Image (cartoon, rainbow, N blue to C red; front, top):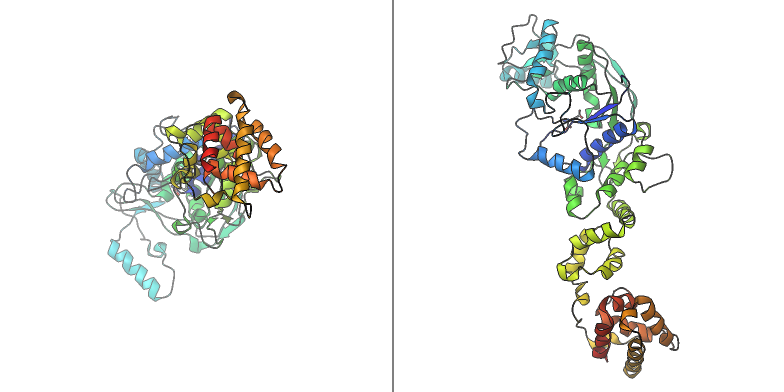
Length: 471
Ligand code: GLU
């Protein structure tokens, strides 16, 4: 029981769900699953100014879509009274009182203007501003109207180990008397996330590397509370396509849910994000979720920034499309097709041409699928193959019609059509003299699937009618 791994994902409902956040959630989830542990979802909503309406529901929607289910948290509940920080204020006050009682927390005696003066003075002296240099000699009684600050007692160098970044340390300059509870009554992230991590028995804190500079402060707080800190694993930034800057809006950093809207499979996005900063011990690149759980190791997370790569995501998505059962494939494809195009036979034709289901939308928009439901329009010259004489093309098409007429309607499959047409094509100087005009007559497109598949989809009557029109 004591050694049970407990991880958490602790988003702030301040806006959209960046793919980097989703990766953090994924790594925490994978680590819990791998160790038969507990994965907790906690909503960190104490920054009321930055809160965005609907953001919490949005986070939950994304997690559900990708299947990162939580063992404790909103909706599912658990041993805690609530998994939302704004509903745990009494608990933070209790911890604050413990610190006050130990003489390790005090009300800020200064006005905001006074603090600003200190800051300006430090700047003029070319020094880093440290609040603790102005720490009052004696502490007043905290009545809740002033911020409550943490008195960092041991101003020293802290050393710690990060599973990803290795041995780290920071000197006293990283330590200051930070605010525990603001004058609006809400605790700061720095304070309440530690209370929560303690209360929820979190064993592994997995989060972005931007938190590394704050860790000495957290360690000082753990020390003050007399609690052993959890294991820290900070994740490298996700870099944009140029590899130098963090993935930002400019690189098209999207809300994770947009990938659903673009027709990516959740298991593919998970697979891609897993590999963004973590490397398995083998060369395997396509993973099911179960395989990820099995292979995932915190120790194999890379220190250097992982680079976003749309092409790789598309490739992985295509690989996952290939893994779908025919029922799942049909269901997904039909969702993107208008009713008149929901034809089972066109599934392979579409599958071969997409890397995500949203590509179907583009195919429809540019009219690439129109030929399946209506006779194509095209300039007659398009039927001519290289320098072949039009008369020759015509007689080839006539032969083709004859051959196709001999196939029974219920045997009009792409294999049989191919056999019939190839028999003729093989007698010609070049197969293109027949196959090109047939393909064009059937599709009206410069680029299209092979004519046998199209014929199969169109059926015998429609195929022959299009060839006749061409003649
Ligand atoms: N609420 C913080 C965030 O969204 C959580 C950081 C952490 O995991 O401790 O970045």
